[in-house]
Image 1 (cartoon, rainbow, N blue to C red):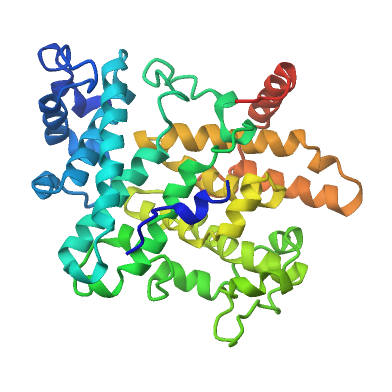
Image 2 (image 1 turned 30 degrees about the vertical axis):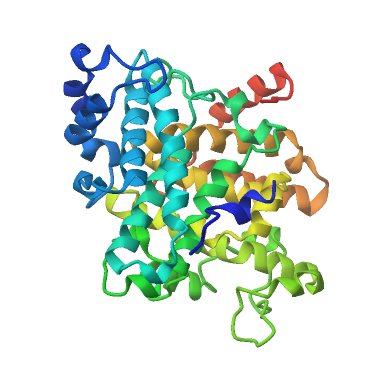
Length: 402
């Protein structure tokens, strides 16, 4: 089984339903090491799991935790994170979140160390559920980057703490964990035949899905201006050694790819996914399609993103903009809005729109498209005054470094 979850990418570098479990008798006590006590976390999850996941068809899977410490600790960590996000005094919850997350990661590695053939389809599905919970925890802004989200909900997360402005070598480790789900799904595909895990768990390259039909036949959906900006031609797909796949050239041929072929390999599938997603109504039932974007990213894309390549930033920023349509979901809104805004500022401050001739005009159109990506329906442009204000903040404070 895929043991080093997310390792490949790591190598490149409603408060409404919460009130009942925020009562002082449950949450005033806690061990100095573990933070919020376990009974309080279990109580909170039991009464608020619908609000915690905010996903269609999500269920209360607490009974599945019996005998599976990795899943139990992941559930406790998510419960603590939800409390931390909504509480004006999150100290105990922050401690419990960190403590339980460390235990969940340790136990999860143990679960993955078993031969995949020894696990039945149902057990494989539960392992994948654990991976999704860990993904959720790493997608949410960590406490050191967003210490009091409940107190700063109106102003949003601190832009200066975004990975976009950071020089830290581990600034994209959170994304590496997200990308670890794809190989896990592919590795366990045969072992979960007959088990329905729901749309979130489908293998990202399963072409039977309507979403991927759009990605597989994208000739008429990717805007011409995107193709021009990325120097991609629809007529020259990049094939592997056997000519069977236009998406997966062997790694040994990477150094042999020309510039256009390399652009195709790195950016084609993400661009196709964005072109399909941007016209999908942002309702809860469709969030799965938005989240499948991560399955189109290759390690080479992540390397470009780590290096702050302008095209990679634009692609990832566009997806973050699309995800801003779901800002009402607590685990999503603060990260996507913060990093989306940071990318837009970074690209403008780099002067891409001021480049001479056709290149500057092209980037001007691309940045306008990026800044409008959060709007629904598409084309209802965001206020220009918003971006002018954000740029003034960035220029007045100098370059952000987290």
